[in-house]
Amino acid sequence: MEQGSSAKPPSGAEPYPHAGRRLRVGIVGGGRGALVGRWHWTGMRLSNRWDLVAGALSSDPDTARASGRDWMLAEDRAYVDFGEMARAEAAREDGVEAVTVCTPNWTHREIAEAFMAEGIDVICDKPMTITNADCDALIAARREAGVVFAVTYPYAFHAMARQAREMIAAGAVGEVRQAIVEYAQEWATGPDDPGAKGPKWRRDPEKVGRASATGDIGTHALQMLEFVTGLRVARLRADFHVCGADKPMEDTSFINFALDNGAPGMMWITQAAAGNHCGLRFRIYGQEGGLSWDQESPEILRHAPLGQPERVLVRGHGAGILPAAERMACLPRGHGEALSDAWGNLYTEIAVAVSARRSGTPVPDGLLALPDIETGARGVRFINAAADSHEAGGAWVDLAPA
Image (tube, rainbow, N blue to C red; front, side, top):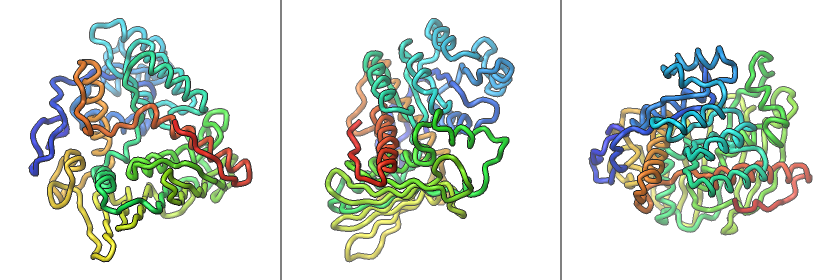
């Protein structure tokens, strides 16, 4: 099924609402070969619900113009300054209706505020910002503007991550009694490339705040844990470590947590584990069974009902796939889907939310599970709570609700 299509999936899951037309979107950051920009662009295209029409792709004029040509933008809509872009696009009849912010963390607040002030919906990379105070300011600005504010946690938009969420909500494992979540990579095991910009700012507390790997990928682990279980981390204790080459901030963290139903859990976050590439994984256990999933094999969800043979569910239509997950499946089983398809699903749900706000049409209950500004704030508060705990020698600290 084409992502933007209104055709009904084979086994009867209701489709996303028909788009009617593509929305106009701009982008800040992501120019000249930046990987994150390509992810967003791929999601927009796969969803078939967006036209990328404007961008402030670099603060360097030459790079901004060259990047605009790369993205096939009209010359007068390839901006150098995001503030100029926000004002100019808001003044156009055909101006952008939403903007994607895919710049480094410390710049998000200022950019998002500029576009929200013009009534433009915001799609923001994570971590949403750096400090809890910045989160409070963004939440207040969004409330005043009344816009959609989505945060890009794409892994939750794999069909089988959605399947896990729906199964847990339906009681497939009973009450959740323990949870283990990890995100393991290897790229920071050796010394950083001195010519690479990314590792340098990711190790600078003036730019990323109080944590490096814990903020960069730990926020994904937190969001996935809370997304699939429907529970919140109530308190945690964290230890930060450098397990790879010497560096000024942590590349690894070990975190114990308690969920708000009292269940214990563990989180392992590392960018220095050789042989791991994009290992976002969870194992959730309850009174009546368990579920496990690995982002590196995203089409498979393992369900172990207590006292019964293990079930292996495979992404596709029918055969135990629940409607909310089936809606996200675009290809029959055996035709692989991957992270690009998850980005397409994410941008589909963002488009549904933006279209609904702009048309005044209500979204059907339960249709969307979109990470919003509160989800983004939750990630930032997690980073700072983990840093508080580490700095206090691994003491337990409360993770306040966003």
